[in-house]
Image (cartoon, rainbow, N blue to C red; front, side):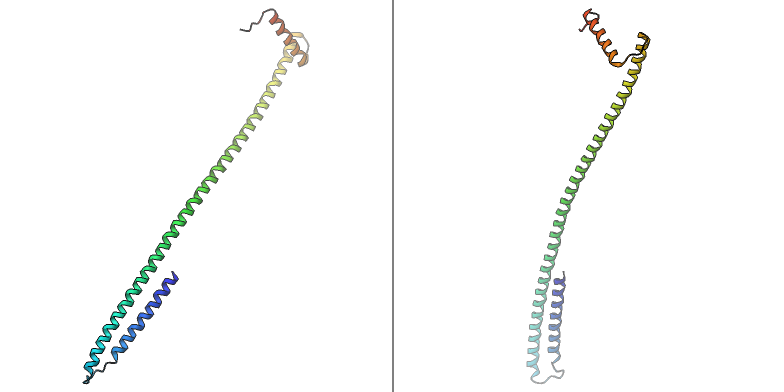
Length: 174
């Protein structure tokens, strides 16, 4: 951008000098015509046309250079915008992947925590049920036998009763 401005400034300075030279050449023509002034007038007009042609060429060349520089500058802007768009797209994809991974991690962690909580809850409930069953067994044994027996003795009695029922075909497995 700065080179473009410098180029425009230099071309404007050159153009100003050429215009100044043309004005100075024209200003040297005397107001009063002398006999040789016809020659000088022809020469001045020829010089003026030549200078105008040169100035037009310089202006056209400067215009083409400015157009080329502008085209180059705008192409650089377009290329930069495309590059930034590609970089942004890549960045967004990476961020999206990171967000998905983090979400999966958090969900897995939450599921693991829920499973642990559920396992603890089950263990607590089974422990409570076991205590209630032991209490019931103690009460039933006390009512049936008239005395309290320990759980292992009660288990042995229940197993023996089941075995006897099987032998006597009291319970059938169909």
